[in-house]
Length: 78
Image (cartoon, rainbow, N blue to C red; front, side, top):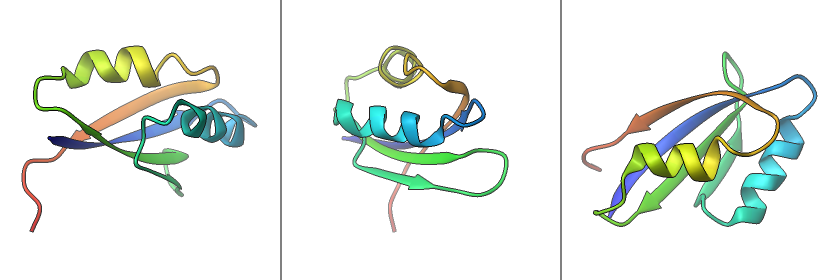
């Protein structure tokens, strides 16, 4: 199992639409509204063989209203 986070920057006025679309896809384990350069922080778990880049590009970045993303890959939980 691989765990990673995606910071999502939304187009103006689209944060709630993006969060709802992300929740409807049922691919994120947790979704948070955040302050700063990005609007949403989403946590994902995928099987070890899944390519994270393809997953983000095909499952996350295709949501209407997303302007930018930044993926944070994790290595170990303490």
